[in-house]
Amino acid sequence: MPPNARRRLWLAGVTVTGTAAAAGLLAHPADAAALPAACAGTAPIVCHYDVSPGNYDLSASVGAGTGLEVEARRRIFTAGEAGTRTATVNVREPEGQPTGQGGTGTPGLTLTFDGAAPSVGRVTITRAWRPLVIYLAGDSTVCDQPVTPYTGWGQIFTTSVRRGAVVANYADSGESSGSFLATAALFPTMQPLIRPGDPVLIQFGHNDKTTTAEDYRANLTALVNGVRAKGGLPILVTPTVRRLFDGAALNATALHINSLGVDLPAEMRAVAATEAVPLIDLTARSEALVEGLGPAGSAPLFLTELNDNTHFSEYGATAMAGLVIDGIRELHLPLVTFLR
View 1 (spheres, helix red, strand yellow):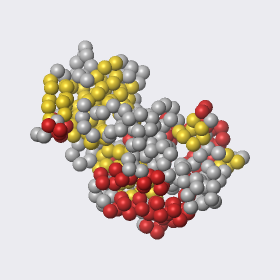
View 2 (cartoon, rainbow, N blue to C red):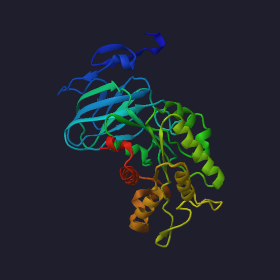
View 3 (cartoon, one colour):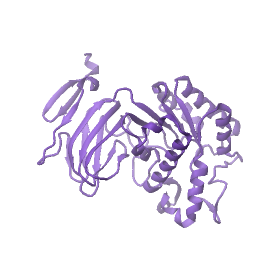
View 4 (spheres, rainbow, N blue to C red):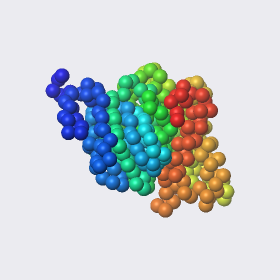
């Protein structure tokens, strides 16, 4: 084994040297008097494993009321009944936003078991063998937000994905359709990783405030073609609405009519029709949700305590992720079989 390919893994007092793939099964036997090796704390319980970037299958035996976040606040499962929970998780460096906004995190894999009184008996981690990778391309409403209360719908979407598929969230704060294409840490890094059949959800619009219709269509088409060039399945997602009301209805800014008068969701719908790309109309879905709740009822979806009517609370991100899941199911996309 080449020296630069070696990783050192400390497991239950045993040192295993080799690549993460060669190390195989990493097991931590249950112990009523102690946490699994590499874990510490009480509420939360935090476990850290020195593994290289990649995708890993996770199995954890947990007590009732125990939830799990991995890396930069990606929710894997919510608190529920006691038992063995499984998932496939993505490890990246940096672990949160690809450009490092909000911090780069810690190399390796960090698991945070939370809840009122979390308990963990056994944790196993193995290198995943070619899982279906669901890539997310988007902005701050989608990304792995490192600091509460900000929550992107992408870091809640993970709760709906079964073991055997994994979410790789390349969304990044402040990105437009053009900057995502041009920034080295974003599409140029993500595209080479795409394998045939991997779905790529593409949501842009919040930061295309001064983008012309021609440029917006060209950028979306370039993203679609770039995904298809690798055999991936592009899926366009119109942007989530802002909570900006004019009476009982959302105003033009909330619905992404930009400063040039470009109806960005309409342009994305047109690209989807022209390029024969599946489209989840998240603008229409979130408009119906937010307007249905009204100005007061929709406030908890957003960070109104911070005077922020664009970004989501965990509650709001959960609602938006649910709308995306609904869209995937209604389109009968192949990844439906990997949803919980």
